[in-house]
Every structure is written in structure tokens, then in C-alpha cells.
Image (cartoon, rainbow, N blue to C red; front, side, top):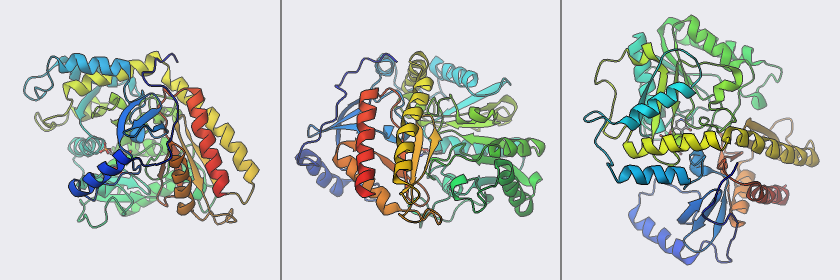
Amino acid sequence: MDIQYRLEQKRKVLKDFPGPRSLELTARRAAAVAAGVASSVPVYVADADGGIIHDVDGNSFIDLGSGIAVTTVGASDAAVVGAVKEQVEHFTHTCFMVTPYEGYVAVAEKLNELTPGHHAKRTVLFNSGAEAVENAIKIARVATGRSAVVAFDHAYHGRTNLTMGLTAKAMPYKYGFGPFASEIYRAPMSYPFREENAQITGKEAAERAILTMSKQIGADQIAAIVIEPIQGEGGFIVPAEGFLPRLAEFAKENGIVFIADEVQSGFARTGEWFAVQHEGVVPDLITTAKGIAGGMPLSAVTGRAELLDAVHGGGLGGTYGGNPVACAAALAAIETMDSQDLRGRAREIEATVKERFGKLQAELGENGIIGEIRGRGAMLALEFVKRGSAQAKEPDAATTKAIADYCLKEGVIILTCGTYGNVIRLLPPLVINDELLNDGLDVLEAAIRAVA
Ligand code: PLZ
């Protein structure tokens, strides 16, 4: 990795935190912004680069969240900034459905090339992850002539009506927002840390899900199975080995479209371009967003040409889908991921984090609070349990929050997640340097020791 940072990569927190400018903005916000939008950090951003976020009061935070897995190449990668500037000086928008442009085509070509499988592929672009998932289901329904869709326990697929229905957790995502779309079914996930039978294999967990599908729906009624290869919001759950391949095989045997939602896990994050590649799974459709465009809003559905081309002309689209500025950013971001070997960097980060926190877990012992350390590449998580509940594995959301709060006060932004709110997730920008990463991890380790 050879990155020229624009901002000094150094953590700094002043005494009065949040500072006066942030407090002023918090007050203005309360009077102007809908209360339903929450922010996990009480400071306002002035600048961001590499692994650092500057706030409006002169504090500098280490970013271990990347704006929820978006700024994989950093929040102001030079190549992305250059490409965006170049594009906005020509045109910001024409609408691909009216007057098309090359950037959209080039992004589609790139996605067709990078996604797993050597079959003929097509791509369609949108703005958000939810929009991509929703359209993948539209495509699967048209292509199969079926309507049922299967999602999993702990799943997160978005906040639109259809994707809320796919998302598992009620509070805060679904609570009070129903009724939800029909023909959505939920199957049991493989969650190794929380399996009642600790010996269950991935294949057996898949058979359990297949039984649910066969009994509750009927395999020939299912249009699509949609799954995050590593579940994100649900707790960075990595299914047992063999689970995803067996589900993909079942889908294939029954004419079901297998959709991998790689909105969070895609684009170098896990040490491969896509998380399904760790088990050699080739999805029929793959949804991407977040990391794809260096922070510009862009999402995509990529997959088998015969599925995407089954949709009638004009059946897919949207005013802004594949915006030219976002496309220019995507091509530059993907180029940076490649030239800086950010997949390799993700694997280095995995090794660093697993080694350090594995030691800490062992040191805290059987009755320590770190239940499990898991994840792939730089999509890593620590799941916390109540002290003394090594057997029961009682989730400890309060301690998890206390750890994140401690980190924030010390200048490290850490995100939590999980159905039980007891998971700390690490999603650093992959361009973070070792010194900054280790400083951030020192703070996290101190936080865990302080609460343990
Ligand atoms: N699919 C796998 O992770 C977005 C959303 C956080 P959008 N995850 C972060 C929140 O509280 O809103 C996500 C995801 C997976 C789909 C989505 C949805 O992507 O770009 O937020 O619509």
C-alpha cells in the first residue's frame, strides 16, 4: 500500500467533547431534522481522509466504521476526487433512461468482470443498497414467474417496504411501519456461536433451512433465496462452512434464483472482491452498493444475462440510477482497490485484529466477556456476553455500548450491531495505516479491559 494522505493520520480529542460547534449544530438539528434519524456520534464532520475524521471543533477521530462499510478507499481518495471533479465539470446528470453515457456502461462491464462466475452477465445500476435488493427480487420474479422470496433470521436488506419485509429485526427498522409485503418467508440461519447443537455442520444447517422452505412454501413456488454471505447489521454472522454452497445447490436444483446481498460484504472488504468467493459460491444475482463508489451513492444488480434480460424493456430504472458522477467515482474506487491491493490489506487487518483480540480473549478466560471473535478480512466482530455466562452466552448489549462509548471519548469511532445489540464491528477504511489502526485497537483493548 502506498497512499498519500491529505490529512495527518493522528488521533486527537480535546477536553470539552463534544465541542461548542458540534453542540450548536446538535441544537439546530433538533429543530430542523426529523427525530427518527439517529446518529451514533455526537460530533459534526469538517473533513475526512484515510483513517481519520476531523470534526468542526478540532478533534480527530480514528474511523473504524467507514460510514458503515462505504469508504473502503477512504472518504477522499485522490483518484475518486479527481474522477468526480472531472465528471462534474462536464455533466452531473442526463438520466441514463433518456440520454445514456459511457460511465454507466463501463461500470456494468467492470461488475460483470469482477463478480464470480464466467457465464454471460448483465448489470443494472441504482442508488442505494435497498433499491438494488428490491430490484433483484423484481428480476427474479419476472424470470421465474414465481412470487415467494426467502430471507433468513438476522437478515438486513434495507428500509423500503419490500426490503423491510426481508429484514429480520423489528426495532428500529420495522416497528410500526407495516403492513409489509406478502410472500416473504423466513428461514433459520447458520449462526455457529449460537447454535443449540454446537456440532451442527453448515450442510446440516442448510438442510434445516431447506426443510422450512419445502414445508412452508414448496420449492417450486420460490422465486428467490436472498442472503448476506456474511450478515452485517444482524451481527457479522459468518455461516458455518458448507451452508452457502448447499443453499446455492438447492436453489439450482429447483430453479430458484440465488441472490447474494453483498451490499456490506462486497468490494474487497472481506479480502476477496466478494464474500461468496471464500466458499467458491457463484450466485445467480449479486447486489452491491456501499464500497462500490468511494462514498458516492451507487448500487447495482449483476448476474446471469438470461435473468436480467428476462425483464421487459423499461421495466427497470429510476431517475438517478447509475448517476454519471457516481459511475466515475466507482471506476476510480475500483482502480484504487486494485492498484493498492486492498484485498491483501483486508487480510492483513484480519490477521492483526484476530491475533490481538484472540490473546485478550484467552487472557480474560472462560468467564470473560468476549464470546467470539469472527469475520473475514476487514469485516470483523467481537460478540460480547455477560460475565460468567460462558455456557448460556447471555448477550450483553449494555457492556457493548459502554465499550463503544469509551472508544468514542478517546477518539475512536466504533460501530455496534447484532440482533441482540451485543456485537462490536470493525470496518476500518482499508487504506488505514498500521500506526493508526494499532492506535485504534489499543483504545478498543483498553475499553474492553476497563469494562471487563
Ligand atoms: N443490504 C447487506 O448492509 C445497509 C444500513 C444501516 P442502503 N446496511 C446499513 C441503517 O441503519 O440504515 C444494507 C446492507 C445489506 C442492504 C442494505 C441497504 O443499503 O444503501 O442503506 O439502502
